Amino acid sequence: MSVTLVLAAVVAGLATFLSPCVLPIVPVVLAAGTTGGRRRPLGVALGLALAFVAFTLAASRVLAALGLPQDLLHTLSIVLLAFVGLMLVAPLLAEWAGRLFQPLATRAVGRAPGGDGFASGLVLGAALSVVWTPCAGPILAAVTALAAEHHVSGDLVLITVAYAAGATVPLFVLVLLGQRAVSGFAQVRRHGLALRRASGVVLLLGAWLFTTNLPTRLAAATPGYLSWIQSPERSSAVKTDLRGLDTSKAHSKAALAAGNAPDRLKDFGPAPDFTGITAWINTPGSQPLSLAWLRGKVVLVDFWTYSCVNCIRTLPYLKAWYSRYHAQGLVIVGVHTPEFAFEHVVGNVERAVGEHGIRYPVAVDDGYKTWNAWANQYWPADYLIDRNGHVRDAHFGEGAYAATEDKIRTLLGERASAPHAAPQGAISVSGDVQTPETYLGTFRARYSQQVHANTSFDYTPAAQPYVNEVQLQGHWRVEAQRIVAGKGAHLLLRYVAPRIYVVAAPPRGAAGSLSASVDGKLLPRIPVPHDDLYQLAHLAKPGPHALDLSVRPGTSLYSFTFG
Image 1: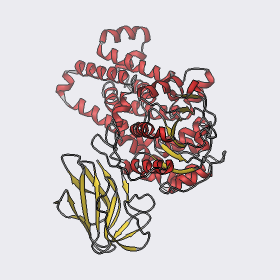
Image 2: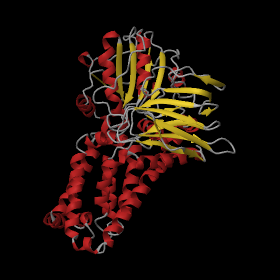
Image 3: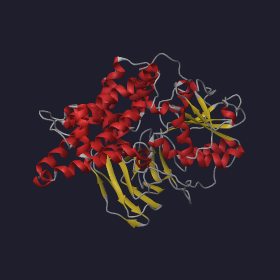
């Protein structure tokens, strides 16, 4: 295993801490960590990290071996949080519990005589780890999949520890600062009882929220403004290292080929069939489906899990496509491959399918058999299969909805030039953002015009471009990862978002610059002194807006992000 993979795991954990997925537990962590003894923050952080490692690697296996429900730990953790919250709100209850469970209960609500809050922090941190569902990138997805198959090695433990460290060390610093801020204000100290009760209310509210799907929905509705931080774990080197962690199975060559070239509607060979499915939802009589039975249909296989924020954001598009094209021959099969132990419970999956209004078939892939048959590594991941049962396309993560819909239409034999409309209830990168992260190199680019790779070409824009499609004007050189401006270089883009950013680099040995015009209004020139992310515009409304970006010759552009 390479050092690069361990470092990427740390960065992935840090990205998790900075992502919207951590928002639901931050107030609960602060409430648990800022009341009690001086070592309570360390206990909360250490308990969260250790329990996360153990829960990720072994919880499902241990619960199954003992014949216990897969969501037992999740339920017990919620009960514990609620119990501690009640004791903080009602001191009389704490005294009664203290007489029964002395000294554990007393430690759980504050600083017992001679205690420093460390032990209670461990318990509360462990409980928070069980109810927390972090966003899963490729690294966490690979760890979860291997652990579910009982392929736990020393390398896998090290990667999980590195991920947990990246996620929990910043939380520890945050709680420590909060504790010091509370202890530093005399006015707050005089109202210690009120502070404890307020913390108890936060814990009770958190316990209630974790019985619902609201935390995941809240995270789904917040901006994915830090997707660029996750780029190290999506690099080809990390992907290769992740595949090397498990040599026990043969991977689907068709799926791997489609995953490595997701932007071309080629024939990548026969698709792997559904295998090892625990249960089927939304099929007649809950009967299983097979690709042989679906021959003659266009099939979209969507790997998802119901607590995955990114998956939830894609559901409105999947439901709209199923409604729009099912009569023409499209079948969508959602393959629910669980990330956490409680997602193994079929009843929980059935409830989530009902709550989200999913009408297409869902296969419960508890044993990761279909996941492995496809050599999949992502939540969400979409694979398109043509009427002959061959893989034709793959897309990982959010975005590229218009491109995917065009490919569905092409495989169905329809014209792909009809306008695209975001479905009702669609949640994109934020409440106002409709435009996904947009790459400009040929490896992952999507243009409304034909591009000429690795050569300088004079481009002419189309008369009426679609929203979210890039157009080039003037001389550009389009390379695998970037585009390099030449004489008279302009980039045109209609986008929907309040803020737009670009990753740019200056010419070698010189300074670069960008001149942006949005909706016909010229904005101040932006110098590009070094490789970095630059904000082009921050507007009051999401638009749609029309960007005309004038680029100094020699300046390189890599991607756009939106917020």
